[in-house]
Image (cartoon, rainbow, N blue to C red; front, side, top):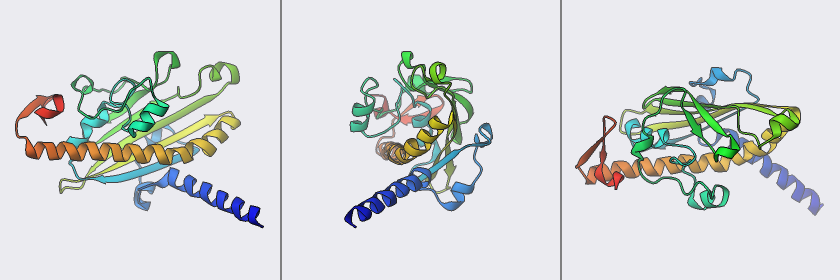
Length: 236
């Protein structure tokens, strides 16, 4: 009896993580909405949509998004996660990095050390509106050659200006993988894990962008960076 209750609780908890991994923070309308990049993977076996409201306009959020990546700004997860899972990458950036503020369609964004051969390609980009990243490389080394494994997936970051100094930040992934055992692993493991990682990224971007706005209100000494004005303290 007790074992059955424990098993039922474990199943319920796992199903909750599956739901959160697909839908955390997003409204039903946002989950059903068509976003840039959706057409790149038409028959996605898994779609996740997450969202949060940021008390900052899109132009204050965009610089944090264009500098993401390995040995760039990282992914804004918690410092303990960065140190545990990505020790060679270092902690996520807590300031705007001028050297990574120029991003264009076709650019490559590394997501691991060179020997991992793991990266995103910028598929679509509209400044201060959306950024679409595409990858066929996020597999363990050697799996393609040894097992015929493959994966296609996209990440899209969308900034919806709410018109009152706030922004709705939507983060979606769409993916397909094979053969069947790789697809099963993706669905069983990656989707629940996406709840924790995506939640941390949303919070990381939100806290940084909102702090930037606070710094701007306190410091009116602008530095020009790529045509935008940023507080001098961010470049210190």
